[in-house]
Image: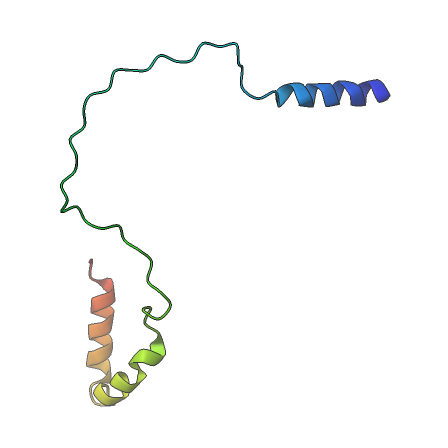
Length: 87
């Protein structure tokens, strides 16, 4: 039983040997000069801060003012259309 554990341990250590240092490094391919992008490139998109993320509470006052029992169906249809439309 000890031999089996020894063989398994040696096999595991051999598998984790890392990089082969005897291999020749790969030849570098010739590179073409790449044109620098113009300064007008779009800035990277950053995640909004928690203060910038709108919450349902932010719209309660506006909804209470704008949506009434008479226009509820029309407002609901407009919201659904807005959500279904591609951006």
